[in-house]
Image (cartoon, rainbow, N blue to C red; front, top):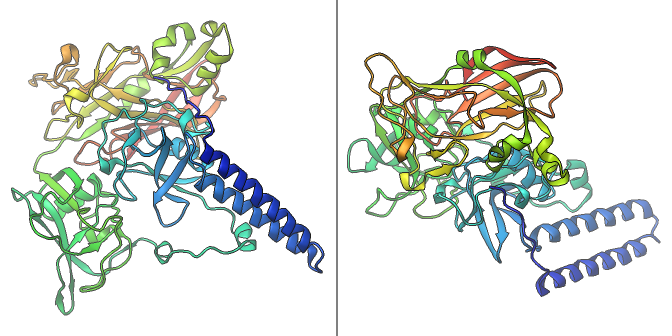
Length: 527
């Protein structure tokens, strides 16, 4: 569904802020004129100009409370943090479903920064403290404001506080900053994340069974063991939970949460914060953390003082999805299709942003064609447990194009990447219905999409989305002919637990010519 951005009429507060800006600009001009009579007229004028630019930028970013304004909260500076947007007179959070580099590009541009370093997920800068205004954002990356992107509707979401979306933006040029008044840098911003040199002991406490509880750690040093302490919940997710379960010999993380649910007494001090794991580490100490920790040192920095700690639930059996790249290689082909036949797909954001511009500007848009790169996506569950959606059944979404409910908001992403590593064709963030389309001999299919049935993928069964289904494509109408990389990722946001995420993506070479396209030399890897 395409959501049109509404613009609020300027309020008396907004008008007062603009008058204040004009007054500041006038005062800075007078100062600039006065400085001009000094001997160092050129350098003084430059200094005044830079101060004026910084002043204007500051007020535009921090004092402008208009419809669609953005701010970053919880970071170490104004260049990073969880994203909040102003709507209907209130600030609200943004959910990290479908949140990636395209959305981060729009946010950083709107805030006046040169560009993004990376998007962040799972409450990287702390849990959301306000209502979620936006969910399932879909930006092309060229929008002027985040409110111009497609999303589910203001306030429509199925997100928890731990799903706050954030960004880290590139800072302005150091040369420019050095000519203006320097801004103090927080001490925390100067400390990079490190692997601990000390040995850590890990345990789960407060759980109802051996495989669940709040994560506690302590340092084992030459002089013995230190105090037990909690782990800050900032950025805690399935990757970190998998490391803890593996280290304790408890299998795989079924759920990794940021909560004090497993606490009946006062929590111990936080000893670890900023924990960031790849997922294949053998111990929590091998992950990155926001600085070293001593046996009885000071508490680690955390976005919240109380109740925001890491917890995990471990299980002995787990699903493991593998993408069938051979099926994709054999089925991939080009198709030119009239936009008249794509109306349903356009309602579900299955085409590039240029198609919507054609629809808006060209009265005969339905006679235009789009070039689609179509292929079959076959996903096999090779694990030891069924793969089930994490969204409750009553929150599944009805899709008009496919005529059934989708239980996964972002099950697959399709991206065309150039030699410079830039995404040059907008990969559709596909939501899926999960069912057993094909099983090995002797395996009875258990899941089906029809009639609001239970959804999932059984062990040794496959879910198949064939190339003739709407939205099973990438719109490459504006793509130049040549060689690229084509990447298909399954469960790319790590929202549903698996044994390993290292076989969830296929990265292939793509040859695109005026008459045909083919993919080859595919390699399995991580999304």
